[in-house]
Image 1: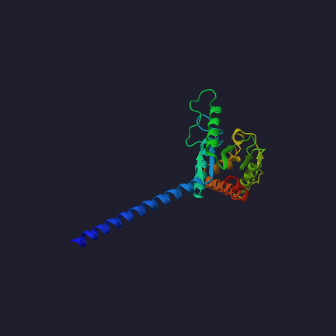
Image 2: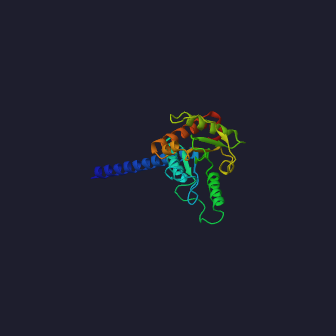
Image 3: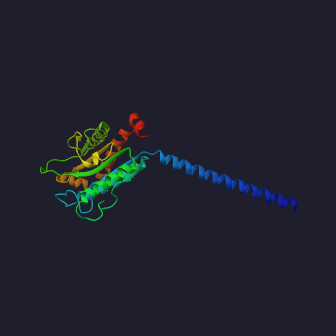
Length: 238
């Protein structure tokens, strides 16, 4: 009988030690996960327009720019997260960020985007848009950057190079300086990617397909990672 009680006590002590060990292990991995999360670089993705502001419209299909922007943004989110980045979206739905569609809604929309960017402390900001021009022959992706920001220029060059390398690219473009609110609202390296011309039938047809939107997202992420992986940028933003 004494042996039975000693044996049961030993089993109880072993079970207690095992429970403590498992608890410590869970805490360790939870803390490790939290630390890893804290050290991940954050990317802010801004799907242009939304709500009553649909942006430009496809000449053939009537597709709204805001819808194409959001579709590409979610593909970018998927790809950046696969690469280990934390992603913040300014716009998650078809709605705008202005609240009620009353006077001044556009200003409120842009201010909300700026608030999200500043509160996220991101390494980079990528704003997704679609282009439109009176000459329907104009086509292709174009990247804009803040003129006074060398890091934004470098980011734009990396992304533009990746976009120029796509098989569907019919004419190589250079990144352009742009004086736009989303580029100027923070000191973060920021670019606007005009993914194509909805005024061009060929671009519009491509932009309506998920396969091409995925190619665009892959090229944009490839260019962005090339920028972030340089030793200087990791020192600045790591």
